[in-house]
Length: 222
Image (cartoon, rainbow, N blue to C red):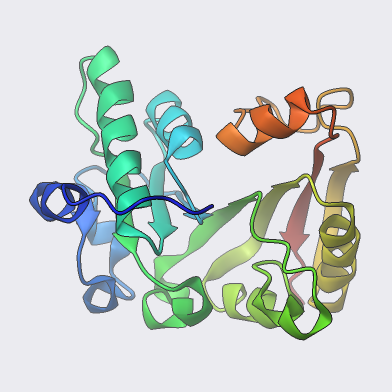
């Protein structure tokens, strides 16, 4: 998603208590950055404006969340959305951290000691051209990286509007040692999540009559 430059985003992020400016320095020590005693850490790759992660985190205060995006303007909006959701409940956002980073280089900021329990990937760029497919966040190349910091039996929750990306992702997961626990080609008709939090893209595509594809996959150990 293209978004206009927002000059307020960088200053607001740098002033935020839940924004991490240099995530490379925290590699292996993300648990210590949260001001609580929660054990699970869940990760959203490509959080965009933060509609999904803000609603998810505020409803699950017993879980810690990390949200990553590459664009300051997006993260600035995500910060504001997070603050809005937590302010409605009159609580501080102590179980969420956001950071700016290139997901293709994610092993520079996460490793096995971080023990990520679940990864959320929502409506990522489908990169339809063959020469660009390795850029997909669900490509085998990326999945091998995620295996370096996922806990044993760690999960991936994935949603997309794109048929080719979804079908290819099923292949990528199988190639990379993941088991498909649940899948659907029409999430709103055949729900597979305990509670589905609708993203901005999901609402837009659904209103256009496009069916939402989704899956849950588990990393097979041994």
